[in-house]
Length: 468
Image (cartoon, rainbow, N blue to C red; front, side):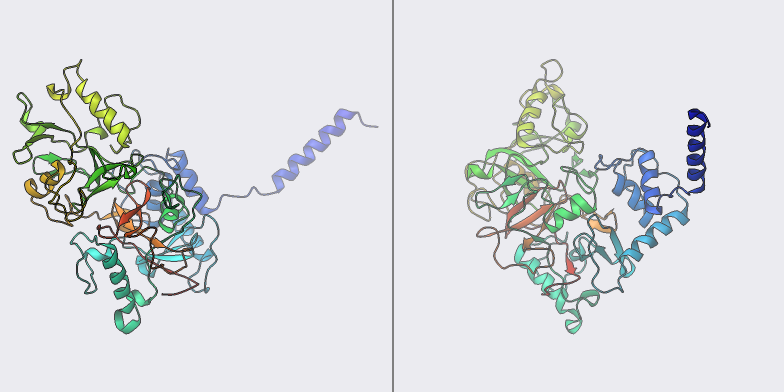
């Protein structure tokens, strides 16, 4: 009888031989690409420049120019491997296989020469151009040159897409529609006065699913990197919403905000993340002319850097890396400006403040402090009188950014509609009288908006289910 240790040695050797004879499962091509991205330092939900999906995986697999502002070089991947990954994803969801299933976590697959993108998670096909209306109006009036439009115009524009070519529709599809948002979405952070879900984390809506799940973004990141620009005496203007100091006419709506993407003055709840442009009343002495801009009409002095917070936080926590912040943080940040430099204040000034709008403004196109043309407010005076812009204009040109398989993505608000699911047609009634759904690709915030506001439009068509 063999000693016990010899028996155990024989068993161990047999196990080793068996392991050696059995091949180790190699990683699938797409897994290898993801692993290479992770090893290079790219992170799921990381900051812009370091995002696993948008900044590494998508550029490698789907091609195109790498995003601007990469924090690190892309890993070197054999073209055979990326081609195999791309082919394997396409094989899983062949466009010739009828109505494809939508597995959880399914990929975004370019189709029709890159003009459309199949979304396996939602079972819909998106138009890859996220701002087609900027160059193709289909004869519909009242579309701004930037591509933004009010809700009624958006509905007419989609209808014109479907009626194109004697009813064959744009690209041969006649059931294009606005993305839907459900009445009940337990993934959302907040609930409104009418029970409507809003805020961050709203992945139950079509645009929310695209932002959070398919593109792998995390609030409050913008899908598009911050803009670096010069506009008159200003620099780094963001084509987005900016905070004011003034409380909205209805305090439950938060604080008055101003859009430098469209010139619309509205309101936003304090939990949202907007940008900040500080000012000083009057024309204080000793302020460097190159760092400020004086508005003789509104009689205020603006900080020339329209996004200073992106690179100067004054040790205030809660500021996003792109410079946006909620209203409470904006108040603290401006206070810190006034205490900077040992109490002497930023640029030697201690009277920095958020701009105000006043209790009512007869120049606004809507009641109170809301609408276009609000030249009575400090930001409205800057937009319309000093920069010479018009309602619907953006402070800078529309974005041409590529985000995964999409292009011309705008870091702003997009229209959505009420619908039970992504394959359901839009309902005619919105979440409240005079309001419709919207989703921000600038920070991942889902909310509602006045139908007279101007937002951008992305469309898709369902692969199965009801058709418009």
